[in-house]
Length: 95
Image 1: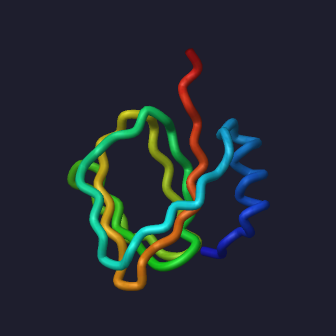
Image 2: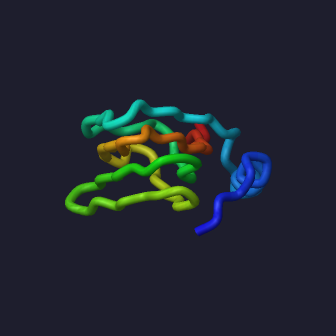
Image 3: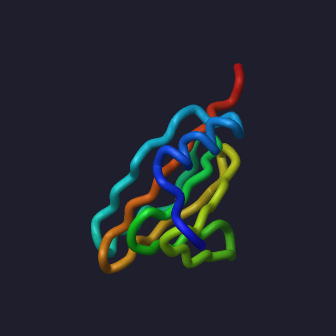
């Protein structure tokens, strides 16, 4: 899958109702234990690789791959030997 530019990704996710994009940078071989977020996320891997686990399903994601999660989805992340950068658009629930 091809990687959009950051402005392209920001424009696309804004059109889908997301509230801006954060650039997330992770050190090589780091692990994020199972957790949740109060927001929905749509993200694209910009550099490196990662493994995203939701329940019994683990996705291996590489540059250009995307993932989407609804709020409060339990998940864990593992990052590759070169570290990982992904761009994450967030959508907070309307109150």
